[in-house]
Image (tube, rainbow, N blue to C red; front, side, top):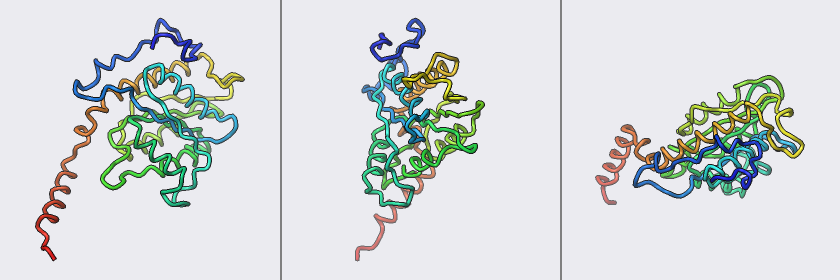
Length: 241
């Protein structure tokens, strides 16, 4: 990835944007395909700044060599308001299963992430049969707000990421007065806030290359091995009826 114009990144300083050296980060026996990143945003307004920020992140992630998909939360039922085979729930869960990393972008509303953002996360199960859809996957968190800079939403999303057993990267982005940071075309203007978004995306890609081939080993736990051994012993030693 060498030409930011071809990726519609007019506000990038090409001399300072560097491709990710996957070989320097990846396990020698690990996957070599482009990192798969899912973006989620927390507003369905026509001019949704969380959506615009997620789109900006998506452009950057593609430049860094990722395959990026975005979930549209419109039509997603409230948690427990439908069966898991609901088309939007299934779409979201399939994307979560596909992804190797995620970006969560929420507005801050009443000092917290939005219900729309939380509903998406709540529909992603911690475990689904023998699979854990989010365990060991990377996560970046960002927020937008209409007033002064705040970190309430990103802090909450960090707690959720930990609960979902994800590897949440150290960097994060909080964009205050978001209505001033995007032009009429919906593109983020050059600023220190935009530079931080670039930093977050760059760091997420590096961590994804570093972790994804090793996630099974990194998340292998003593307590689960003990539980699995006990279940196996119970199954093998049960009487045949």
